[in-house]
Image (cartoon, rainbow, N blue to C red; front, side):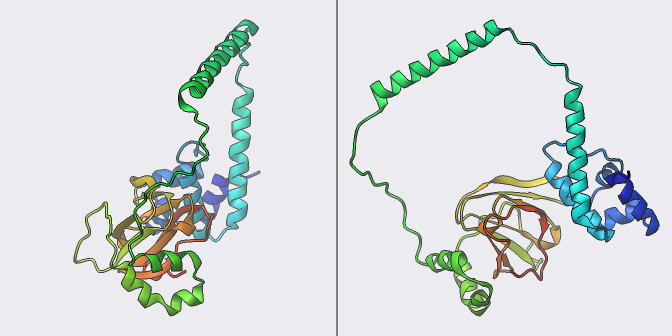
Length: 262
């Protein structure tokens, strides 16, 4: 039975393409393509990005991408199970288990006693926290971003763009004024966001707060990975184009282009 790497390599050769051709076309390093074809991808912290690269490679070769991805995941799971079988089990002395249980119980008792003696208060009054009001210029933006559908969004696109332009942009990279196409990712609710450049180097990786923004030159072709795509609003040259995905969607190595609309 052919492996995923063998299928990719065989189809590439049938189409008379070199690894250099694939790397240039997809903006993926040759090392990653070689690892994919030689089944050298490991289940480590970069696995989500490697799955994204595999998806792009498979689509480019016009293969059945869903089948390729499922086979890749099954092969990876099989290899992990095989490695686990080779691990020699460690026999743990029951005495040490009892000792650990006793220590954990003692710590729990100490912390519980401390909490009820010094921290816990039976207070039924409601305390109110003082939080800053949302600026009036941003209230219509948040309401529309959380409720609009595609038709309503297209109808009011220009009005929303004017309101967005009134907010401050927190840009972590320097924008060249001569570059006309600038992408801005506006965070509607807190969500994790990571951007990587064409060489798979991390440009940004953090939990973005509500109303925080990040801008970059669109021709940098950053790969975008996010925990909740429905919390990210996209602006191209200051014009609102829509959310980058639906609520709950996990974004995997997505690249924005100038004609993006949603």
